[in-house]
View 1: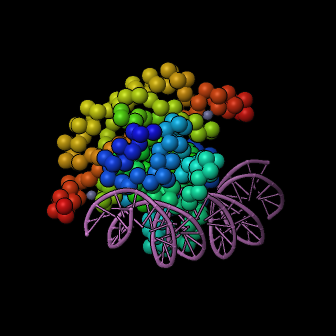
View 2: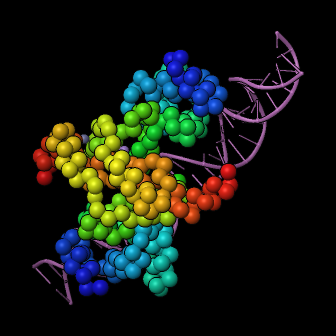
View 3: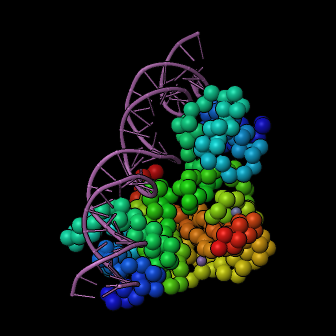
Length: 144
Length: 144
DNA sequence: TTTTTAAATGCTATCCATTTGCATTTAGAC
DNA sequence: GTCTAAATGCAAATGGATAGCATTTAAAAA
Ligand SMILES: [Mn+2]
Ligand SMILES: [Mn+2]
Ligand SMILES: [Zn+2]
Ligand SMILES: [Zn+2]
């Protein structure tokens, strides 16, 4: 995708095939992936890429706000997705790890308030809801 | 503290000296601590306690909502604090790891909305702001 | 109080996501 | 084409967190 090269240019990152590959995979998957997920998908696409390169690329992208992350509380893994222009928040199922994206941010005003109250220079925030998706609620209640 | 024994009783956890010790330390520190922080503080207090016991106790407490956690994005460690009755959100400094507690929750209504919209049974949420505290802003700008 | 038993603990080894060191390759400036 | 800093591969290391198992202990039962 040509757009991706622009992103890299804008971010002052060299346009390497691996970076473009990571962007491709994230784009077509359009969902959160762990570093290892990306590694496996890259292999399927032929690519000869090392896991540490994946980590390094993802670190670059996070720093440049090309990619955003969430932390899976149970598996302790970090998951990565293309940063939506309008950043999103999430419903995360504690059982099956399903992630639902919420559009819009309900706390912009609040962020402003606390930022000035505490003279804190806020760079970003996380707002994630943990619980059980519809499917897993049923499984869960049938277990009990 | 006598109150702590009640907490353990209510949580159906045996009242062991180690659990009471962990509660003591968390109470007097009144701040987030990593498992290792707790381990060191316990040692200072004489106590002969193993790190894995600390982890196991903290797991118990989290499950029973006696303790709540936040994840440090940079160090990847989990930090623990006594659960406030009114759960709190945080300003976390990306440079010095300082944590400022925010009182009150600005998203109760929003949580209701998305919970019913997506039929998602929300158990808890995280809302944390990452950025730079007043001190670190100054350091940072002087570096550049 | 003494007995009994499941829960809690200490110690050690282990796991596993992520990071790092270093030699080699490569993108992009000149 | 040359040159140089950035990017990469590979392997080893790191480090927070877990798990296994023998031993101790809280607290229920007798
Ligand atoms: Mn937001
Ligand atoms: Mn809240
Ligand atoms: Zn689920
Ligand atoms: Zn700071």
